[in-house]
Length: 441
Image (tube, rainbow, N blue to C red):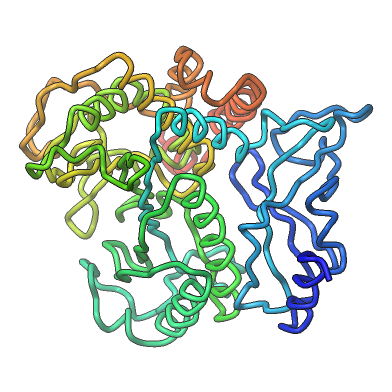
């Protein structure tokens, strides 16, 4: 019996009936199709077939060989879904006309991972997802109600009561068990600064595995929340008066022996760590477009006080040692990059970072002096991040390095799609405008 046949027998015996061939579209949303387990071999070649023009942002034609997108499964990613044990996920790399598709987000990250590997480096990434849990009933009626109706404290950070009663704890319990079964090492779970807002931390991994895991995190959270009558949301800023949700990245580079090359062995950053930090700050404007890629993202990136009395969103392009008011925070021998939110395409987001680190190391860039002050208090003459999606897209369009990391196919599609999104927002007339202006004059 071949290994593949043995795997099919194993899957059948475990109750798995379908394979979900999963890839990410331009937005970073999980897409795919189901295949009966007997067709496991098809995922190696030719792959699961998709009509290219039906995939958001891929801009593939309606005719010819380039009209077909094939997802070829990475066998190392095959995992049965604990909340649906009759389905196993397989992460796919995109192919078009028989070659890797340059616009496939996972292929984009693979290219940068290969460039790191040429130098003997592996980028390690710890991801900290913040998210909201809403009542599914409330969402259905157009309201955004916290999962727990009693979650109403002005400062709910670390609230014991909400965290340990239904339906929140029921969700967390099943979600934690599912993540553990999927080889996540869950470290901490807490109630964040907004009502209905939570964070789950799990251990870091190499960039490609970290990206695949975050896709799985989103899939699991959405499905399990639905089972408990809840709605999972990565919207960066659902409420004007409450803190928003970020997706902080903890970054380091290791060598073939697993040594952290950002570590200066004295409790701080090495030369390579400083170069990487400098590169991230230098390209922050362009990275903003792919790390905070929605209109709503820029409602989060402000310094105004919230109802809970605090905010954690970066505004200035600066760094500091353990400074949570700066864009980059150094924590011993790693860099916490505080810009991203959960609406980013995780593959593109990490590819941009990898390319910036490589370039900064080659140029031996040095960061500016650290800021050891609260940037939310008192004016400082520091460069600001883009103030809206339009400014961020202009910064990306002008940054040859970050655009090059994404590749022509992805970058052009991204800029076109996101400029359309920004234009649609600018043309929308909001309730705020009607209330303020309809009868004022």
